[in-house]
Amino acid sequence: MAMSTIIPFRRPAPATPARTGCDVAAVAGDLLVVLDQLEGLVARAASMDRPRIEVERSVQHLLDAISAVERASDTLGEGSSISEPA
Image 1 (spheres, rainbow, N blue to C red):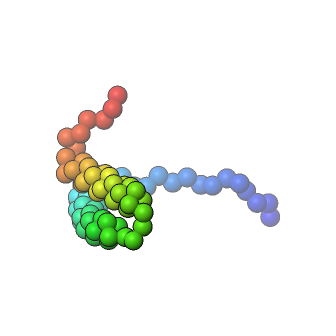
Image 2 (image 1 turned 135 degrees about the vertical axis):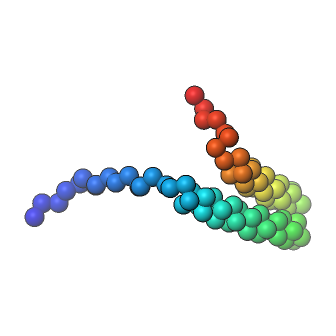
Image 3 (image 1 turned 90 degrees about the horizontal axis):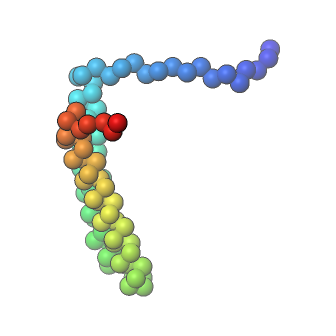
C-alpha cells in the first residue's frame, strides 16, 4: 500500500449565530480570568528579589499584556461593528 502525502482539507461548518454568541461569551469569560491572573502576577513580580531594572521591565511587560487582553476584550464587545480592512 502506497503512502500518500495528501492531507484532506475540510472547512469547518459555518458558525450559527447561537453558537457564535456562546463562543464569544466563553472567550470573554476566559479573558476576564486571564486579566485577574495577570494582575496577580504584576503584584508578585513587583515584589521579586531581583535587580530593580529586571523587576521594572517584568512589571512593564505584564502591564502591556494586561492592555493587550483588555483590547481583545473590547474588540469582542464591539462585535460586528468593526469594519474589516480593505
